[in-house]
Length: 161
View 1: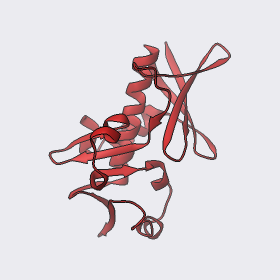
View 2: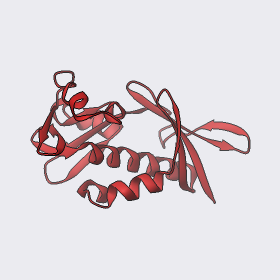
View 3: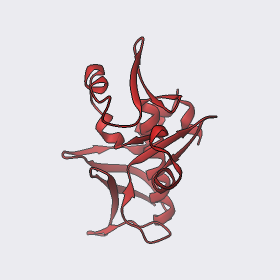
View 4: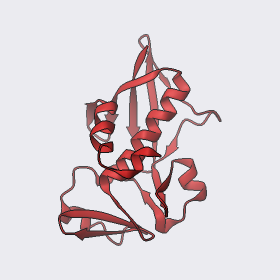
């Protein structure tokens, strides 16, 4: 049986939920935590950490905070974010890259890591395949996680972690 999950992105954390019949229920991890840090850390060699792992083991220079603030912004809007976080945002030809402690990643790679982590967390907790999500970031948007991940993962190396 497949599930649709709800993802509520706040400023620093996100929460997950699903419908049990008509009753919404919050999704917790193995430790019972229901709020998860919106952080992605990138390490040399192609590895990344997401959520609590990024919070506990990442350093500010290799960690992208609040990844959803990167969505839907133009190149000039992204470049204007420089100085707000420890990582640097640069433009390389037609690409906007994030310099996470000398590991250069695209906005797509940040989102791949975040959404893959969310999907894995939800599927483990629900013991069911997650097929789609309703994402709240101030405006409710319905999106298929599989479509998002498959489109983004087709060309990016962090999709295999």
